[in-house]
Amino acid sequence: MTDPMSCREAFDRLDDFLDRELSGEETLQVRAHLEECERCAREFHFEERVLDGVRARLRRIKVPGDLAERIGRAIRRESP
Amino acid sequence: MTANNPPAPHAAFEALLHPLLEPAYRTAYRLTGNSSDSEDLVQDAALLAWKGFGSFEPGTNFRAWFFRILANAFYSKYRKGRREGAAVALTDVPELYLWRRSADLGLADVLDDPAAALLARLDSDKVNAAIAALPEEYRMVAALYFIEDLSYQEIAEMLGVPIGTVRSRLHRARRQLQRALWSLAVEQGVVPGGNEEERTR
Image (cartoon, rainbow over all chains, first blue to last red):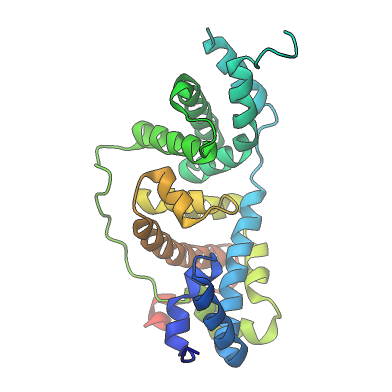
């Protein structure tokens, strides 16, 4: 059994935790901390929602409908 | 062509490339900030990849291979006289920048999901422009990061840099981005303005 994480230790792992880059054990330790510490849980949730929000905005960037066709034509022009 | 013939090389190539075109375009848009340069960049990368397709090892990661070509195409076309890896000094942005600014205004107390409320009202093109305005090495990592489901390892492979470099650049890029998003929220009237630098200290 490992010692519980402090707020600082959890916070130092925030980015890696949100990106699922922590080891299984560290992930469990962070989760255990978030279950006990409401303030950290709110901060982590906020950061996660910022990333979700940015992704959602970026998904709205429209991709030209003829992109695949145009690139396909260019590739075939270059084909032997 | 009979059923026993292998597909033409360009057909095999296009089958691998096709699902990547949308994420490639959006990545290019985050790098260049405009549609015309993005289309050119994706097309340049596609043609370079096609010409080099003979060197691609079947069964390895085509996505990482292609995005590496895209990144190199971006660097060779848009880099202006600066060597790869040259560090750009970034002003430090305090941790949890958006959270603290939102908390200063009491948004976290009155809204269930203050981050979503803030982001939902920002213009998508301007959010993209905030990424495109990051210094080059941070911009590249951030542009790739916002492709769904890429691990740090995969980004490191795409860029040919150590995973620790990806981690540190990405974490700093996020902080920079948070400050840019807050400025955008002020500019668009989503939140009231004020001397945020003073409050940060």
